[in-house]
Structure formats: C-alpha cells, structure tokens
Image 1 (spheres, helix red, strand yellow):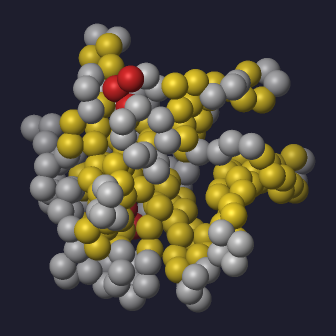
Image 2 (image 1 turned 180 degrees about the vertical axis):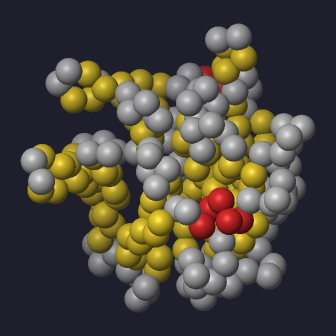
Length: 218
C-alpha cells in the first residue's frame, strides 16, 4: 500500500510513460520509471504483458519471461491470485478480446484456458483483476444492456467452483463513456479504475470497495 503504478499516455504525441507514486513519510512522490504493471498479492512480483520482475533489496529485478506458454498471447494486463493463478486478457487482431486463466497445479503451470460465456461475452473483454482468494473476477467489456462504450463487470466463484453470471457494476460506477481497468487494493478496501471523462482523456477514479459484497448473490 505504499506504491502505485500507472501508464500516462500523451495523445498528441502518441507517446506514453510509466509513472510510480511512492509514499515516503506522509507524502506521495511521483517519478518516471522504466517498467510498471500489476503486483502480486504478496507484493513481491510485478507482471507486465508476458514478463515479470521480482522485488529485490534494491528495487525490482530485470524483466524475466513468463515462459513459452505465454509468448504467443497479446497480453495487456495479467493479474495473479495468492495461489498463483494467472488471469489475463488476449487482444484479438480486430480489437476484440477474451480472458484466459492458468493455474499452478502441483507446482506446474497449466496451459492457459479461456473462460466460459459468463465472462467471455460481448466486445472488448479486457483488463481482468482476480481477487487474491479467487472469490471473484473483475473486468470490463462492451455488452448488450450496458451503460456505455465499456462497463465494468464482476463474476463470483460458485460453491461448485464454477463462475457465476456477469454482474454489471451499475450506474454509480459505469457511465455512458468508457469505464474499466478495475483493480482492488491489497487490503480489499478500495477499487481504483479509469474513466474517460473528456475524450481522449482518462481520469483515475476510486471508490470504497464495500459495494462489491452487496453485489454478491445471496
């Protein structure tokens, strides 16, 4: 809870940069960094596309490959559960995409598999986040019945291990524009996400994550 990484894109030039915000004392400091991505629940590994870095005494290690199982996927975001399950998006050549998962079984990484229609339905299915305990997955997609260009959805793990139907976050979170990139903080208290406010600009939003439990089917 003392580091936050974002990608800052400059639309006029088409360039982008990675930015880190770090808490030192009672103040947040901003700096440009060479690498950024999602961080594992234990805070020791950072994932970006099909590579990862490990935390060291001096910062982060050099990038390492996730291995041949992931080399052929066009990954934007990969997140990991506490048990090491990977959930990631795959961007298609026509702009559509699907979500896949890969578990650690007896210490061996399984071949990535696509989720079912509960999750992989609609257009532009991307930017997944899996809860550390694997009790839910958050992602964004363009679907029928949504509020705008892309909405955020959640699916809860069922008692039999399957994934429940997608639940829209509702109009308190989703707007007529693009909303996505949802990510819950390691302490489970806050949801951070991106909202396209004034095209082509995005703003980083946050909200109390308490509402997630209210969405869980009883």
